[in-house]
Amino acid sequence: MYHSGDAFHVRALKSHIEQFDFLDDPLDVALRKLLMDVALPRETQQIDRVIEAFANRYLQCNPSLFISDGAFLFTVWTHHCSSFQNTDHPYILAFSLIMLHTDAFNKSNKRKMTKADYRKNTGLPGIASEVLDVRFFELIAIPRSCPLIGRCSASTIISSLPLSSS
Image (cartoon, rainbow, N blue to C red):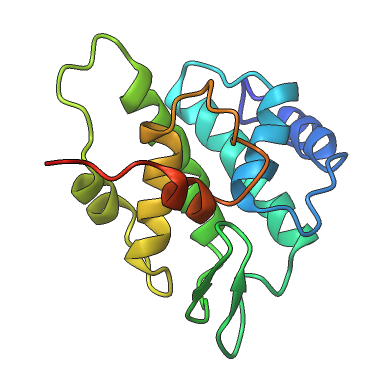
């Protein structure tokens, strides 16, 4: 489906992704739903086609999420954010999540992305840096075996962790 940019393959990819219902799903949950069914290819152009199709479908399911005339509850990370005027946001955010995950868990990567790097790389108008901090923390700092994963919000998990002595 994503191996070629020709019209047939683009339509096939779009048709497949349109089967997903991302209505009211946080962006990271919607992305996980997609990736449980669609394996990402290795080539950057192919990944780009999949993420672009995903972002378009996400916007179809949540048309007012990224275009708003006031503050609203941003369901990607359940934090208040400013209004969005750019429909590229879901594409950029989804791609940044994939890049952060790849960076964090690639054993041959010797210089891991810091929280400051992630903020700088992903900073978008209307998205508070605290939102990116929570995303970074959820992906990097919380062990995958944490029993709280999926049961409560990141802020609950953060507040339940012991304070560092340093």
